[in-house]
Length: 370
Image (cartoon, rainbow, N blue to C red):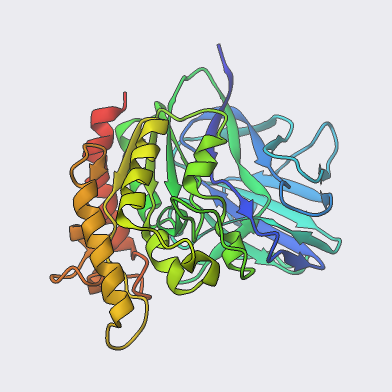
């Protein structure tokens, strides 16, 4: 029997410490669903805002120019009112054909001054993309530049009316998940391997740690979210498989945050944390790639962190739920990312690096799913 099923979700997260304040907003978001159907529902959130939000109009189309777009209604109204604290608020059903693997585009317009605290983003533009204009009468254009952040507010994903009963894979963790370099390649391969059988969602948060919640000694640090262990403990349900890209920030954040420095993780803490993670539900995770903290000669502190990372990777590699991806993106000395795998900041992956990790994850995923 046909029912509304989640077809894609990229979870917004808490930017209340650095809210986006716009006098007007014209937002365009590209999402790529995993399921097909003749009707859909869009999903919105205002969990972290300090006040209710109102959008004058929401439209959906199969092209970024929004030609022949369909208007979206909410309990019969053309405007969208998001009450403070609401999460995954659903639109009315939209008579709009959705095709797995084919992007759809959502335009949201707000003519009043508002502050938005529910935020998601990507750097890779293959699976999701976004652009924001500060004027309601100026149509934003979607960029194709993986060196820039493409962010959006309040939109989480969509449901599709289908009689399929898909399995669900959650890609989670830190910026390695959220930035989209791994996600766009992994999701494309999953769609090809399991058409209409699997839905992947992305709940990564840049700066997220395995063991500790976000430090509160800086507004940017405060956006890093609750620890992955805390987030999953509070989850209402587990997916069929969880792929976690996590651990780097537990090692590097103490170098930047005084509060995080007091929580400096030891090897035994990290190993035990990953074991706890594996006990929450079906899990695949990876070894931790090298990163550079500073330009110039490597400091003693940086060498110490790299030794801790290498020791942790030896611990992780002994477990069947861990895929050893670090050597695939590291240089020969395992002291930094290989040039072609590096985003350019010494810490994040390029599209090529993301594809290398995705390729390595797929065999483990296929052994576990369906």
